[in-house]
Amino acid sequence: TSKCNGCRSCERNCKASCIDASSHSVDYSRCVACMDCIDNCRQGAISYTFRNFKRDVAEVTQPPVDTTRRTFLTAGAVIAGAAAANAAVGKLHDGGLAPIVPKAVPIRKGRIVPPGAVSVANLQRRCTACQACISNCPNGVLRPSMDLASLLQPEVGYEHGYCRPECTRCSEVCPAGAILKINEAEKSAIHVGYAHIDYEKCLSVSEGVNCGKCSRKCPAGAIEMAAVDPSDADGSRLMPVVNESRCIGCGACENLCPVSPVSAIVVSGYEIHRID
Image (cartoon, rainbow, N blue to C red):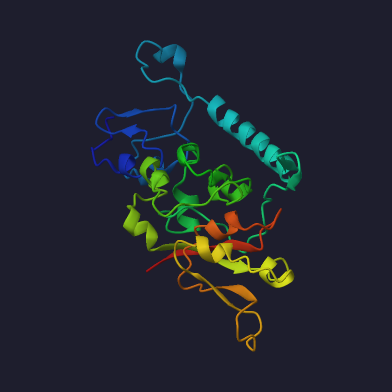
């Protein structure tokens, strides 16, 4: 405290918002030991070291670092991932008759991160993996990443729902600035990814069925039905076509596509979100 000049740089740059510069205290139950406070303190007033609790027991008011929470989150994410993978290969039945194959995770050309995250790099740099956005997502779109580079940070998947244009819940609960707070109008202008169609799977082409569900359900009007054969004057056979400039990557088309286990239309993410 003798070196602190009250600039509050440590507090402003804390990913977990766990530093109170006015009282020179740290909420160790939230600290993720990212070391940003040390790097940002020009006075050398912050250090990372072992605490002598026997000597300081009378004056210590903050609890020691609780690593059990992180251990629990890691184990929980692994178990959840295994359960999801197991469910993806299982089968359900509709009324005991028609088999329903749950949606499986598709291969995406780019990782999808929530609107407000700005970019994949920004989310990786600022996110503390607190799970607040994941636990508060009402649409079942967010899940913990299993990639080592972004372990337990949120990523978007559309196997259980889609990112509804009117929902901004994740941006409202993020404590670290990894997902910036946005309103409904701002969200509708953010393009987190784009949809692309595998015509070998699409029912409109592979089976000659005029499905058109992706076109009807697209909230951005980015999918139109076009003639499979240009010479087909009466338009009896139509196929979906994606206008990537209008697609916002919400995943409604992927989630609602009747093809299973992997949808015929899949969304891939942008490294940097595009804003209209």
